[in-house]
Amino acid sequence: MSSLVRDVMTRNVISVRESAEYKDIVHVMHARGVSAFPVLDAHDTLVGVVSEDDLLVKEAMLGAETHGLVRHHDRAKAAALTAGELMSHPAVTVSPDATLAEAARIMHLKHLKRLPVISGGRLVGIISRVDLLAVYDRPDEEIGTEIAEQVIEGMFALDRLAFTVDVCGGVVTLSGPVRSEPVAHSLLLAVRQVDGVVAVRDRLGYRRS
Image: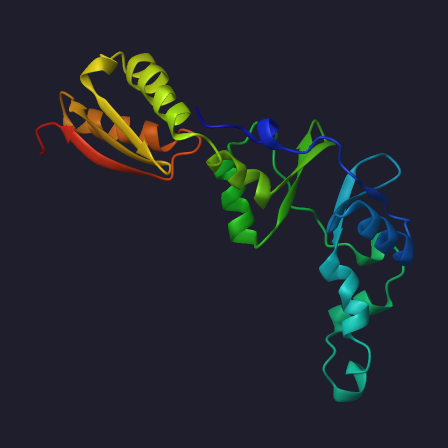
C-alpha cells in the first residue's frame, strides 16, 4: 500500500552547525554533491536549512547595489558569513509517519525541493522530490499483484478472480462486478493509493445513482 516518508527518506543526513562558515559550507556542498543542509544548534535541534539559493545571494548581489536592485532581505543574506545567518528559518519539516502524498503536498505548496524529517524533536532523515518519485519506478506486474491480493481480496474481501486488473505503465484499468457505486468509488480510491499507480481507469460494473 502507500509508502510512508520513513520508507524512502535518506537516513544518513549531512547537516551543519549554526557556526559553520560560508566557504566551509560551499566546500562540503560541492564535495558531497548535495544542494542543501539542515542546520542544527548546539543541542542538535533543527533551526533552519541552508541551500544553494541562500549561498548564491552573495554572488548575485555583486554590483547590484549600484543599480538599486537590492532588497533589505537580500542585503542581509549577502553579508552573511555563517550557516546561522544564511539559513532559511524556521525549517519546514515532515514526520516519518506522514504519507508520501502529504510530503508531496507540502513540497508543492511551499515550493521546496526537500524536507527534513523530524521525530521526537530530532532530525532523523531528509526526503527529496526524487525520493517521492521513486515509488513510480515499480514493475507493472508487482503493482497488479498488490491490487488483486491486498486491495481487492485483502481490504474489500472480494473475489479477486472475478476482477481483471490490467496495468500498463502504471496506469491501472480495473474491471469486475461490485454491488454499489460507493463501494466502487472506495475501491478505485484504494487502488489509486497503491505505490506506483499513475492513474486508474474505471471499468467496474455497478448500478450508477
